[in-house]
Image (cartoon, rainbow, N blue to C red; front, top):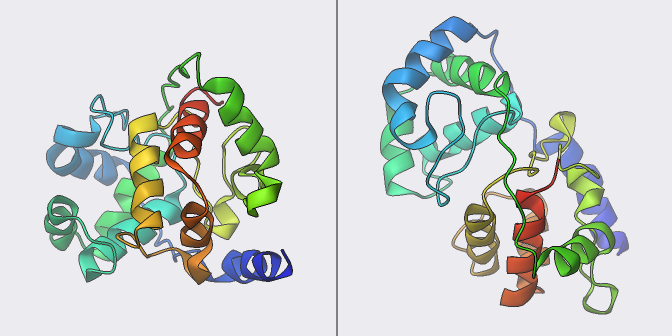
Length: 201
């Protein structure tokens, strides 16, 4: 647990990406031409495997776009899209999507209770910490520490990210924080907590 807390403190410094002075109107224009097909004009994607960007922290969006462009985070579609964006474009798009309101989903009734237990209390016997430690009680995350908002996010997207962290397919988490957690989770736990996050606000 001490190792995890040290990692949390280090991540608070290292996870935040610099954000350029942003032009929200320019971001809206870029989003409406490049991002709209998957993430929609207001950042509320309708395909559950594509993340909602509405209300996400600027620094987190910039970090992900920068790492897609650099090839640190792998996804053929997003790597191609990010390749065309300058640092200023990324800052503008991030500012625009951050200002949008996320449409909160609904948690599956048969998974919400288990998901809430994991989200709020973790799984002590497996060394899984509570999600609230980084993502907060309402899923709003912590922008200054680089911890993303997860409240209202598509369950299918969250579940995929947990599986990707568990398999090391995704490895752009500071100090292996998410990978260390996801490695300890089974499929049922991932599905339950993802469903809980989908309805969290």
